[in-house]
Amino acid sequence: MRLPHADGGRPNPAGEAPTSDRVSSRAGMEVSPPTQWPNRQRILLVDDEPDGLHGLRQVLEAADYAVSVATSLRQAVALMRQQQFQLVLTDLYLGTTDLGSQIAEVARERRPCTPVIVFTGRPTFDGAQEALRKHVADIVVKPFDPNNLLATCRRVITETELARRNQELASANQVLTSVLPRTIEMKDPTTSGHAARVVGYTDALACRCGVGAEDRASLRLAALLHDIGKIGVPDHILTKPGPLTADEMEVVKRHPAMGYEVLSDLADHADMRNWVYQHHERWDGKGYPNGLRGEEVQLPGRILVLAEVYDALAEPRSYKPAWPIPKIVALFRDQAGRQFDPTLANMVADGLDRMGYRFFAANPGMLF
Ligand SMILES: [Fe+2]
Image 1 (cartoon, protein in one colour):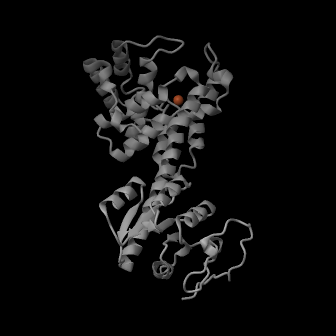
Image 2 (cartoon, rainbow, N blue to C red):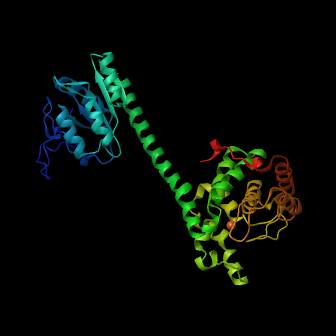
Image 3 (spheres, rainbow, N blue to C red):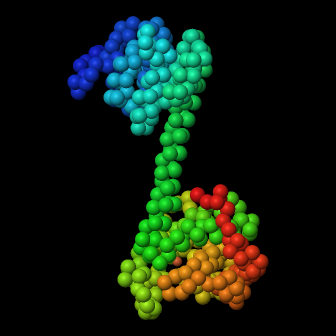
C-alpha cells in the first residue's frame, strides 16, 4: 500500500526533534507530517513490534485516518508535544520497562486532551487497573477484529469531541448565567441579587402553572436576563437618588427594547427574547414598550411580569423597606386584571396568604 502524501523523508524544516513520522516502517514507507492531512482525523499509533505497527497502520489508513507512528514511549511523547492527534492507539507494553498507558498522562495535559486506547495481547487485571488509573479511554485485546477496532476508535473520538463541545457549552452557559447578570447588577447596584431571585420566583410559579420544561428553561433565562437592556441606560439616570424626570423615565423605558436588541443573535431563543421585551407590559394594556394587553403576552411572559414585581416589593430598596406579606397580597388583589393577569395575581395572592414567603420557594434543582 502506498501512502497518498508520502514526503520521501525530507528533513524537518523546523529542525524539531526527530519523530517517528520520519522513521521508515518495515515496509519502507515514510509517514508524511500531519500538516499535509488538514481534513483527516489524526491517530498516533504506538507499538514496539514492527509487524503489529504495520498491520494496524494499514487498517487505520484504509479507514482514511492519517496515521503517525512511534515505536517507543519517548518517541510518542515527543510527537504528542509537537502535534495534535484525535486519538492515540498504543500497545500496553512498550519495550521492557514502559507502559503505553503512561502516554495517557501526557495526553490529558493536551488542550484539547487526546483520548488514548490501549491494546494488549496479554490482558491482566493489574494491567487493566493501571490503564484505568491513567484514564485510558478503552482497552482492546489482541488479536483484533478490524471492524471492532475501528468502531472503538470512532466511538472514542466522537465521545471525546462531544465531551469537548459540552465543556465549551458549559463555559458559554456560565458566561450567560453568571457574568451577564453580574454585569447588569454592577450597572444598577440597587437591584443586587434581583435577577437570581426572579429566576427562582418565575420557575416556582411556572411549575405551579404547569408550564412545560422547555418553556420553563427559556423563562429562567428570560428572568435572569430581563434587565440586560439597562446596560444601555446612562449611569446618572440609573443611580439618581431622587425621582426621575419625564425625559429620564422615557430613557429607562427603552431598556426592554435594548435588551431585545442585545439578545438578537440568539436565534434559538425567540420566546426568551420576547419575554424580556415584554417584562414591563401590563394586562390592561397600559404597560410599555408596546401596550400589549391580556394574552397578547404569553403565560410565561405574564409570569415574569408578576415575579419581577414581587421581588421589587418583597426586597428592601434604597427608597423603601421590604413590604410585609399582607401589603403584597393586597396589591396583587388590587392589580388583578389591571397590572397583572387576574388568574395569576389571585393565585399568588391566595398562595402568599396561605404560605407566606414559602409560596415562592424555588426548587434548587431546577435552577441552572
Ligand atoms: Fe426592567
